[in-house]
Length: 358
Ligand code: NAD
Ligand code: DAU
Image 1 (cartoon, rainbow, N blue to C red):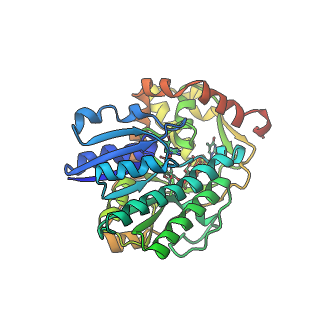
Image 2: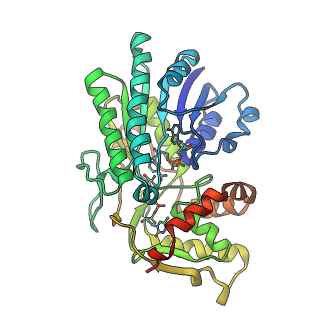
Image 3: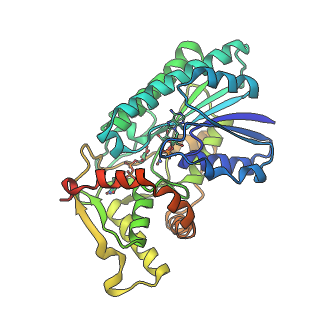
């Protein structure tokens, strides 16, 4: 049995990773350290106690709490860390950047210090791994041609991506300076179950169902490279199990879509499921609103390295997995009701207030 410490495992990608890996790796035990910010929901993994008895533990705590991190690593004899914990939403970083500095930069630095301490004290075990889960947004914005590779220069546009860029640099510095066995991944936009409805796809699904306006930033032609969350989880497992410390791996789905096309596709999928046609079709709700400041035009990943070196491939087609995602949200009303707290409503009012409507 090997024990993995996952940070931020109560969020979107982390909770999918914990669920998927406990099912795929019967010899893994996972300890999930999560501060339960607005984006974290421990109930996402409530059923792990029965699905994976004795192999899942939740610890409510902060990556900034070095004593707690060290205690967990020592008492659990953890052989690896997969670091998801972060502030992850670009629009929130524009309205309140400091939380992103505190969690993504300072939090990652403190986590690295605690992990390195325990790793040194344990005699620098050769098979220990620290996987830092980062984003393609560190590379900035692409024009109509070309792809991000692992050697593309960093050029972040938002406080979120700048804070993730800083955290990537810290992780690499720990590897080069101390020989700490860390790896970095930079992934494109994920979608799938358990994503907080502040992000494009779940926000649009919920608004279409509730027949609320669909706020599309700018001209809707910004392009994202979409990856189903389970494909990302499998890529991270490949990096953890077969990646080389010190290396960076880009992860992407090769599914570039303009935002407006994704929104129209969601309208069609939900119209079909709710038997809406003619004047009640979802697309009537589309509104082009003021653009996101510093809005990156296009992201597209060259995932050649992880495919060649680690044998990873995305398994899910965008159209199929998007439909499955819609079905998941339509059948998880209780999860959505729980999310729609006062905090969520306040966020929607703040971000989509009259000032942004174009
Ligand atoms: P999320 O916002 O859904 O979840 C973040 C989790 O981290 C939450 O459970 C939150 O409670 C926890 N957290 C925040 N601050 C913490 C702290 N100080 N200590 C402990 N836990 C804390 O994010 P996500 O979309 O699941 O993204 C996970 C990671 O993957 C992030 O690092 C993000 O930058 C990266 N990433 C996300 C995407 C994407 O499309 N969502 C793509 C590429 C990379
Ligand atoms: O590329 C990876 C990144 O993808 C991750 O690092 C981030 O954590 C994740 O949030 C995501 O960032 P984006 O900014 O690309 O995702 P978001 O869902 O916020 O927006 C996707 C696109 O849709 C973007 O071009 C902005 C646009 N958009 C978004 C919202 C919320 C709209 O047009 N309207 C909206 O209401």
